[in-house]
Image 1: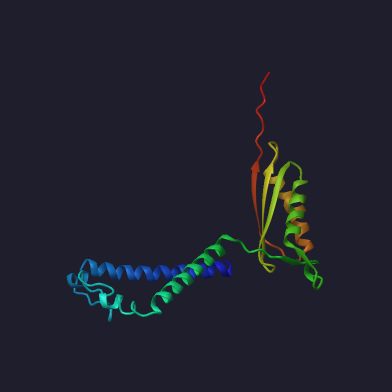
Image 2: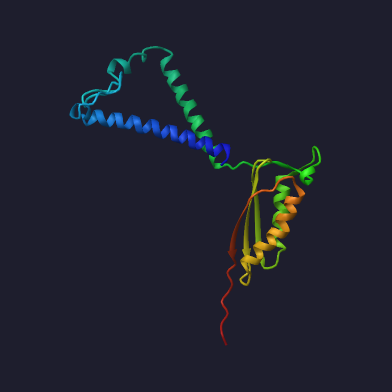
Length: 200
């Protein structure tokens, strides 16, 4: 699990817990369950019966007459929306390693292989494997923990097991030997459609 996914799960768990507890407290007050079940509401909680409101009219209009109130509200909403959009965009984009050290375990100091160059070389080597019609590669993760994803379209007569073996022994082995990292790889195999042949 990456640090970003762990942080996302923690934030989602906290948000879900807060919403669940708040919703249950509102539900208990709306259904008058405190009185029916002889329960004691949380100390200071304003909603204890169906007739109660979360904010009184005085609380809602307390600061509305001040000059700073509405600019402060608008600024706070803009900040919340901006943070939400930033978080959403961060989830949509996958991290990329940028550069990977070259030279195996005893890598050359300051010499890096760019992610897009490694991606192109990996895809090109994969295309030259027998029975491979098309191939695409993608490198994600960080420079310390890179990940690769390869999409392969086989010819109609291709054998998936043999192709995976040749991929592991060829392009993936060469890429791992050229860098100082040995990363997990996800391979998606497809078979190219061929035109049906009419029997004579």
